Length: 336
Image (cartoon, rainbow, N blue to C red; front, side, top):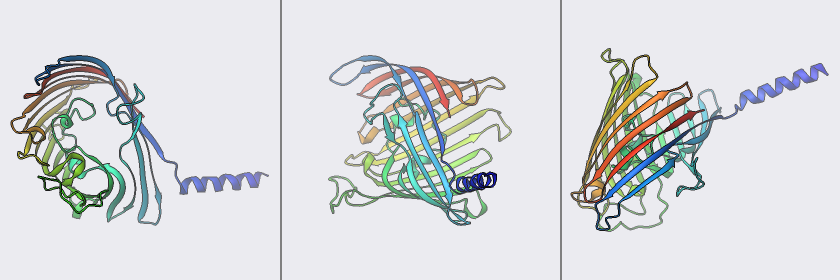
């Protein structure tokens, strides 16, 4: 019996090793948020609200399985969670980056499924308010797309230098041979996105390009992004600075959207506090002539332990002929 038990244990261990269980991960970032809106449209409907916001809360399952000595199957199933309600317009659970693919030791990784565009990912960590639903780059700029029916390739570091290339084709769901009126978008054509990024010793530089991405009605867009960890540059420990510039040719609009962003985040010495600030300026927002928008945001983070962090933030978002919006929020984040 002992021999049988030992053999069974060895067999089970072998199966477990060959087919590793997926890693379960996620986070809850729940904040209370007060918003005051001064409506500048003809409706002149001012509002103020206090609500709970689930922000970028999510749960995911990811893993890999060796196929050969050099190739692995990789997968990820990640879902956003509406913690405080059963619907947010997308359902309580909604798909984020979900894919299956192949990763080769030297040739890179090929993915298929739903994924952020390389253009979106090119921003790196420049947007220091990225995790909040109602504050950050995505509220003022076109192009923050997570797309369906995508086939994406990510290179390993190129020729021994810390540069990576990523490209994606967004397969069209339309069986049409027609253009969208007054745009360069072809409804029956695939969309494309690409990025090139350098990342080493605290210096990050990237360029991204989108073409025919119908989910944001973008004819084309390009962006440049960069950040510097001043501590790793032996200058100011704890300080990271970032910047981004972007131009977007919006479908059926005559004026290009032009946007820029500057940001900074500072970890205060040996304390658990970090503070951050960001400014965004957009002209011809979403392609509307003379619709200019600005956002200034301030925030603080308090690290309680490795998994738990407190958040405080405030932002002023002013959009010409639309609204002036004040947002104040705070809450807790737990990662697992």
